[in-house]
Figure: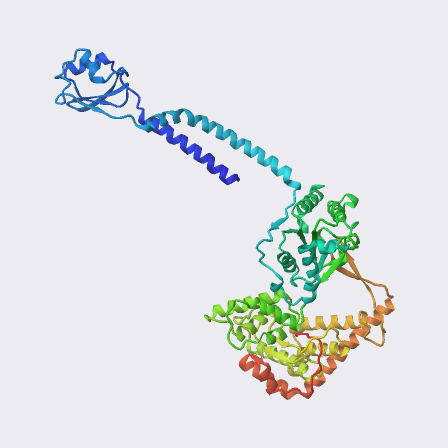
Length: 621
């Protein structure tokens, strides 16, 4: 019984006790006079003072006197063995005095509740006392149980009888599903593998960026296999008390063995599985003790336990090597960002059951969402549905999907933001500079939309999306990205003979790309095909803090010179392109001032691509 139910029980007992006491106080009024004996009652009747008698039970009589001021009531006692009339006649009362004309005698049968109420008057106080004792005992026992269960596992168990997620609900990761079908087959038919001496991997580590569907994939494996599914987060093992995490690990594995075959899923295992020796407590660090217990439990499994451990993380590089060795997490399944075909399959899953307008092409939406993972696509579909509902539509249209993509990328429109006419003109030329430069480059992606409507922190945006996707990025493509990023600042210089702070983010991205080309990718002749600097990471924090220099000051000075040369080269090409296409720049900017947003068809009417495009990796500006 929970604390709330215990409180209700105590309140009920108190209420019952109060009702009983009130009843007896009202029902049993204190006597102001001594009750009449049977002889005194006979004398009163013979004297003609009594007008009515009410016999309630075998021994109690209510005597009613009628006086000038009204009725007066007293009580009398009689012998329980005989009736009242016989007793009075035996005492010499004349029959005429007992006639109905003189005395009205009413006999009321005893109520069945009288005995119970009388008994309750004795039992309720006892029950109230016992209930209070029981309440205090339960409170003490609950505190004791909470202390004793502190080391119990907090894993949530889901039965596999009615699966809610299967492989049909997971799309865009076909290779990962193929890898995990073996796990499902082993859970369904373990003897098929055991008879041949095969050993299914004890642990499966799901690796991928956030939002790629690692937890969803684990649930799908459980749903396909139809087995119990234990879910727990890595942070739920570790507490401030020493030994609690290790105790919870032991309890979790004991539960798993009792429900074999089953799946144990540990989300964000890097919270407890980081490399040992990185904590502040040395060998007695609670997190390391929990990890040690986990390693022991995973090694202690027999080959026929039919328990598979699945874990998810987006930082496999910080996990302890002992977790990743064969015999523990000896299979790694990568869930990467989906490609265009995968995004289309994911969209089919998320639009299932939603009303769509005729002519919706999910392939076009997939092409317009490069870099989106499953969570982003689900959010995009949900935003489109919200927009359709806000516009009182009965189906989701292409306009809602396009608006949802822009909301996910850059945030909602800020049409209420008031800017001056001069600032609006600067923003128009800035975005037009981006669009014209990108469109004039062979490696530039097709411009899909140009807008001067503020979104999020941006005063405007230019969206350029690729026709196809590539895993590799060439030097020309990186240079084209930098030239396109600098197009806005160069347009401000040419038109207004001044620059603004609107290009701050563009300059930051250009500088980062130029330094990466010089120090990480070996794309410069001056520095050669070398990597300069080593990433310095604090494993305890799990993120990159700084770059450790492994080169001299002379090399550092040369790196700065090369980065400056790359940026100047990109700036010079952007300036040359805008001078060449100044007429198109003015036309695009003027149209933006009129309509605020230009789509791909209208932009290409104003400025047809002067050169054929080369395919490359997407990079929206």
